[in-house]
Length: 277
Image 1 (cartoon, rainbow, N blue to C red):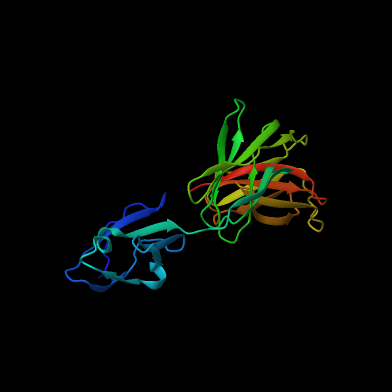
Image 2 (cartoon, rainbow, N blue to C red):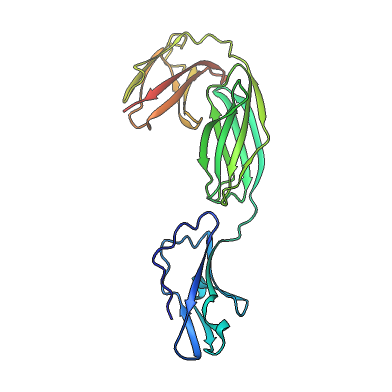
């Protein structure tokens, strides 16, 4: 006896239970066999054959077949009420958010969170509170199996309090929120008027002029750091002139931050540019 199911339907939310009809012409011993599984996530879901008469079940992904007896004089051994094919979420270790923190950095406000047992099925939406008290999405990402730490840099903090929280969506669709964290941000007092970047946007070359940079080529006293819009480090180099070019043709489309720092690592210039098509 082989089981064939042509259309399964959606099982991702609550799983699926399918009644199987068992009927034969003669009393005897029989076997239900599962020949193949297609389009079922057998990593995150279990597939069981449940025998309601014997209160028994079998992992069909592992064993593929189940032997049983039918007695035509006993209606409980056959028909539509004995066997159920059940697709259920596999048991997973309990997910835990172990920390959610915020720090002031030169580029803005850095948000860091660490987790346990996130697997590859936990969704994150970083939210920021506006001046009306509403939380709006700032950044979203999906957990990666084997990764326990995640980060994002808010490059546009407001002057004053910046309040954040983390929305977490687990494998069952359950949504939870972290405690809020607040960082008070003050405007950088340095004058960055000496930094010019053009053309902006650009798809290939940008020209950068920093009028306060040293012109002594034997003593490069400044460095340049480039970050993408989520604060990921892209490039570092030393400069020894008040003007230079950057080839950004290999960069992904998006917004980037260019920072100029002195020999002590102090931020002395910052601007944004856009890599376009």
